[in-house]
Length: 310
Image 1 (cartoon, rainbow, N blue to C red):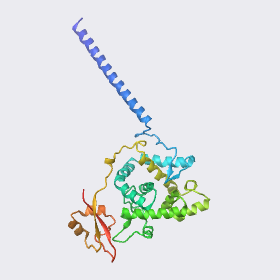
Image 2: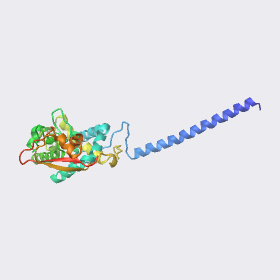
Image 3: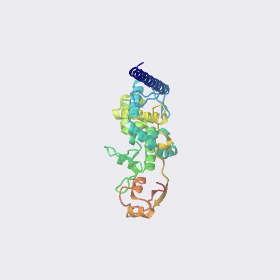
Image 4: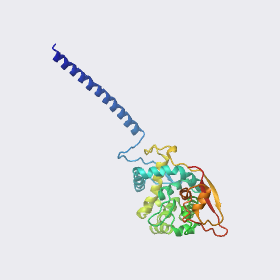
């Protein structure tokens, strides 16, 4: 055999071996991918693809059954669950913030005797942040000034307790309990938190309705309870809804000590310097302080949180 023929044959054999190797690698890769897809399907996971998040067969709202056999109820929940599952950044931030703020909210809900699931109303209202709405509702629980003051929160130039998560949570509990006593159910109490007690009462009376689920509301209130339920489903069943976050990845509570203020403070900057913290730290942990000083009326006192860790 001539040298040229030998070289050609060798090249052909080498090329064939290379193609065979690539084919084998691709085969194993395809098998691995197929296995992974089958596993995801078996676990009812959806990733960054257009797949409907699964609905439960039954669910309750603060211990009250939700009539999922009604198509409008089921489709309304499906709408909010789909929206929350696909607004990745907001939902992920809410999950992270829950590590820091749920322990605070849960403790107060328990003290006040309210269902723990009302923490998801707080998520719905503000994404667990001191937000300000276009209607000037403020804080984690989104109180407008008049309602805040009627439930015992102090709102003035130097102090706005709507930004105090503990006091605002107590006030929200009182509002929800009063609404439930008047309207008869927690779902209607939640609706009242969105549109006001009188608005809910007038709607159910005019329509001769007997529950949130069969009352026609304005679009925002009509979606409200379903949004709370959707957050509950995602937070409590992360493995079903494609959420991959560990407890260590959530924002953790920050250790603090307290200082009781019984007399006026002329300058928070000097106060912070004396306490060994920055003004930025002071504002982060005491956002209800709205001015650079504090006038303390006779017989009044305020609790200041001072972080003891970074």
